[in-house]
Image (cartoon, rainbow over all chains, first blue to last red; front, side):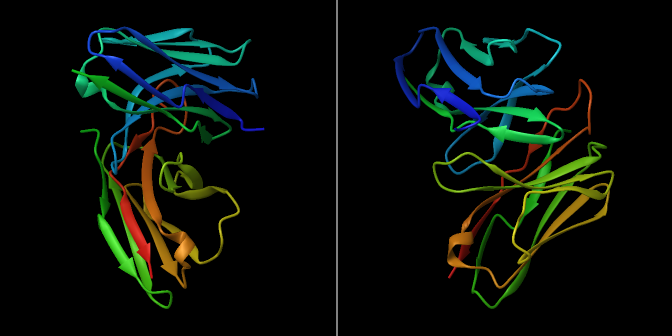
Length: 110
Length: 114
């Protein structure tokens, strides 16, 4: 069973909508969870990092939460814009290793 | 400066060639990583260096040989690769632990093995 799962795999929304991306993990042993953005053919850009002792982090229109007991993290994007279109990846880190989910590909239509 | 620089951006090599990928950061990070990413798949961890010592090798074939000459540089030496090794190779760096354990990624080297 895949250790880190992201739902949905793809999402298309009109500009201005608020949206939630989901990340779940099977192993509750976690040091931190990081959300990244990846544009096609590019590297990864760090968005937010949540330590295992924290419950959420916020940066601008982005808010990420972490619930270790249920093995879930969510990334909330407020007032989406076409420039937010990208693939969003979550990565769970433990014992120095990071394991990524397959990502959610977001398209925000003007 | 939160930049991780990878060179070259693109590399085409034959199966008998020897080449190297390079990664550099000047953020004072003491953990550096190599990942491999196939198309439409998430990055997969290959190697982790912590304080210039190899701390994690995810059972990577010996045709990939990492090297960390100093705290700012990370190399990946390639020899006798297979076509299935074609992928985007990503380097990342971070503080080894603590609240600043944010991984910063380079733009990657896109490798094609013919």
